[in-house]
Image (cartoon, rainbow, N blue to C red):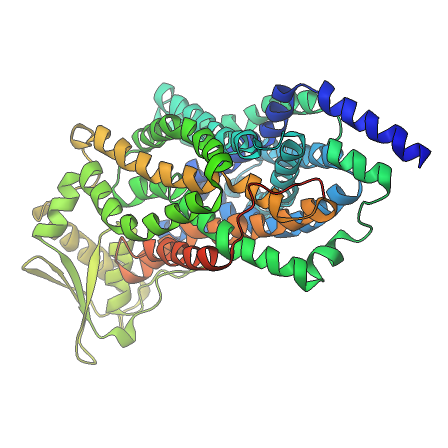
Length: 557
């Protein structure tokens, strides 16, 4: 007992002596870094597709680039298990020093990675390995920051304190977006696409150096120090967290009743709109990045507001309200986003809707993970491949079996060639002739090749993006405090990291890839929104019925 009694006051003294701003700032730096790194992959998906996935058709190349982006998310839960266990046994501070170093060095290396034209298939393989390393490290990063800040926060202020983690996530997004937009403005397009896109990855070494230096000034969490002094740390946190039903049940409720909805609402507020503006509304990259960054800047304070509010009225009502609202507003707001960003396209869709008239039995699924399918073996594939590649919204009209496909643009019908019996050269010529005729029909109907910058209603676009952002802050601001409060201190790092990273790594991280694959497969530019809507609805139901309120809990136990 003598050792314990000496250690406990020492932990209290450390808690009082350590500056609160340093605790919040140093812990949150990892989140800045995390989202800076991951947002770069989203912002630069087209450049990554060009340099590392060349030799495939444009639509598939972009989706493969998104898959590389999602690969880092895919391994996050495994990183949560590895580093969550270390954090519960060894301590919070040292664990998230290691995770930050791995994360930052992996990102830095991308800036110097040769492209496919230099080292062939090794390029995408190495890129994928770096993404996997980064994802593993991030699996332990968020949990460490959330636990560390919450265990320093005074009672009644955990939501407020931990909300700064989410705030700094937006700072990471804005920093990445600002960097990329600035480069696009000061470089010509060819220079940026050739080597300029590498600079944001290389710059990450500066962020890494500063973040590591600041984190080295931290002391261990007072709660962990007390547990360690009392000999109460878990010897097998993974078994205790996930092998015992009383704890596993809370993990599942946290995942499906909170984190899953937070993940899709979060991605529907920043990454999905960016892809949507560029790939569907055809807004140029610099303008799309500016619009998203402007909206994110405006909504940053609301993270802190909802974190603070959750200390007063509870975490659950704020988060569940956001999930319910999201279910009902995504479709109308994304349609309004297209109208505001590209009114000419929106008008053309209404005035001259496009339809593919075809026997559905001859159509392939318009997604090729191997990247070698040219989709030219049937008339249906030729038609849908052209429309998907050009981001054209279309409906499917079933025709009798054996009917050769045609594309209707308003009242005009464009016949699609039947490639059966044609050799490679003749098939290519027939596809080229169809493409030219289809483009002429689309041009005549008023479908623009890209959004006219003068017609982009920037104010309205930013307003819509701010609504998406406010929903994200409602569900994300209180989240860290909620997760910390759900689990006992001895297995807290492991328990909260896994559901958070399954939600944000798998459910949220794959949203852009799955969403755009759904768009490419169906032709409906709004089809991918069903992914977010359904998951938000599931979270609302599970959360309202089963998620406990936690804001008055004692987290020392």
